[in-house]
Image (cartoon, rainbow, N blue to C red; front, top):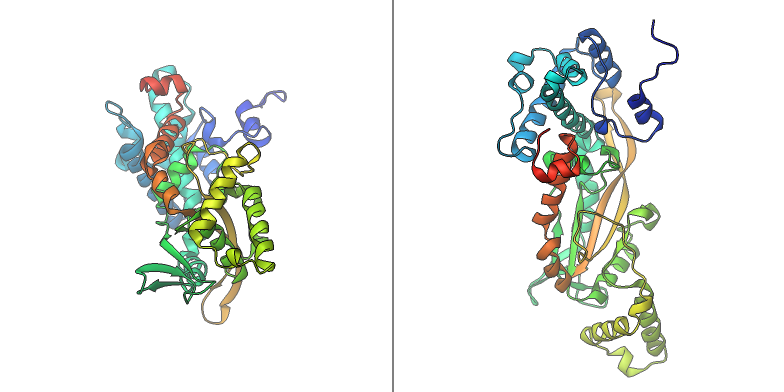
Length: 382
């Protein structure tokens, strides 16, 4: 019988201490039978063939991702961990991850690495997007695509159906490439606070406008046309590093007052002149500019945009024949808006996408292999 005063600290760290299971150094399972019970509580019955196949698939994908993206020259996953013919039983992987024998430290470390990546793949596979990706994409993207048209006269993309006050010429409208499983896994591994449930940018769009002024017009358009329901915005996910909101509103109030007073200069003010006025006022008010920046350690300091996460109430049908029924759930998606000059700047230097991904990959590697920062800098595998 276990000592009634003996507690496993790492378990308490996970349950009540706020530590992710991905960050504990080892498991504490002493036998294959105990490992099987652990896996059952985790949600998989190894007596069920479909469950076994799903876990082996997660194992294959985890091994492939580690080999392709996380290990460096000279590092190798032990064969008894990646070859199913040698591993034979996934329960054995958990036993290896629990081993406290110093002579098998490398095997234990790599077993934990494989399990960490498997864990993330499992959660992504069982996310709502995994089951209903077609419905989610159709219901989120179609309302946005319906208000985008080509302007053959100007040779540009138009937000809105006609060239009038409401029509906004765009440099481009992009549907962000759907995050691959590998990309999502790297992101979740790099950010300890993230879990699959809080991966909010699997799906997204980007509006690239001619001017900063037009960027704010895009936001207004989406709300006024009821394409975006602003009560469904997730407040703590919003970013505005493009232009200070307080300064923008001051300039708009000023121009609106002149327009209401039938000032012909305000009525006929060209977009270029509006943009010049905004830039001038931003320079004058630099000391009191109010941006909204959500810290992201992987982004360059100069990465600028308007970004928000909205939620769409998606309807899906499940079941067959008489048992078919509908149910509804909210699903998040990201909208980015920026002017063309900012878009070009974001593509270069330390905020470039490739650099961003490299920083994420480095942090994911450190976490998966249990490396402390100093060890990671040396490329150490101990």
